[in-house]
Length: 328
Image 1 (cartoon, rainbow, N blue to C red):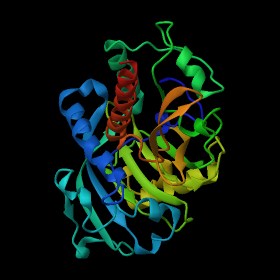
Image 2 (cartoon, rainbow, N blue to C red):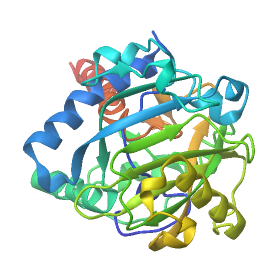
Image 3 (cartoon, one colour):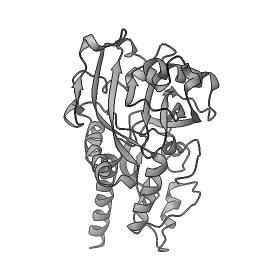
Image 4 (cartoon, rainbow, N blue to C red):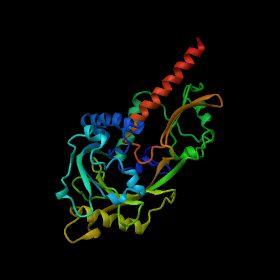
């Protein structure tokens, strides 16, 4: 729930933003395409949701292609990506304007989400629409069917437990694994959102920064450490993150200050819920209980959220229709 800070609850630690990484022609692309209009509408019509538009620049280094970060960003940094017709103001940056070591770059308008505002806002929207929240511990996914507030057995259970689906009875998905992300939150403002495909500090380290809406500070990162579960910030990694951010964006600090000019709010660690074979959105029956799964969103949960939710809803509708026909 919003306000909780469990290491396996990744949502509060996300930036969060919209930087499409789905492969062209894949379901992932469709989910991200379907999500942008929803985020755009929230930004324009619901400032209380904690989302704002932000100028965005993405840099690519060809030498990062084989690294974990380069593979993650491979679609994002394409010179002619599919999302150029989705986000506003897309344009490539001319080669003569690129710093040494940068092979191509693009600019566009994206959004940045202040998760500390957005997540409680979502809870409010759910409550307004009749959702009843309960806290409980389930050892098996089918136990959730007996937790409906009406006292009746639920018609369908939707499993959105992220990394916890590794150990949830009835699911126990061994294809799930974490990609550890470490961030530093600062009060400094870079003036735009910046990302680069990798770094020279290690193949699982990169540079990104974004300023959260509503005074949420600037997130600077980061790392993409697969199968790493450590919940504690690494001080040495934090220093590297800050040095890379200042090198990429000198305007973060006053001239000559270096990382000492960063006004640190806090350090954070989150575990992105990756899954071999990609996100799992499918329906199945477990011990007689209809279950719709929606988990394994890696580092793109927010930017694919509305598309993934729409697909899960379609599956729920299918389950309910089949149950209705079976009663006839």
